[in-house]
Length: 69
Image (cartoon, rainbow, N blue to C red; front, side, top):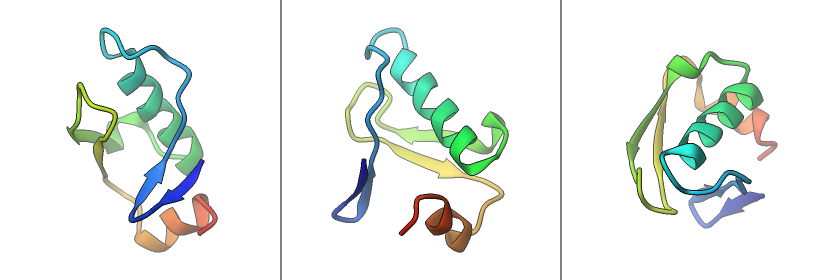
């Protein structure tokens, strides 16, 4: 959905139960950035709407280009 303050707002269709939304979020990010899912680590927010994801193997410039900032 785009930038929201200093965060990236992403709309996921999966329901937030049994980690389904977390799994879909990682899959979406991996596809968008063209990286394997193993490059993404959910640092915090496993049970929250606000999440922190650490991405390995991508520069800030690559990330900005992928989300068109």
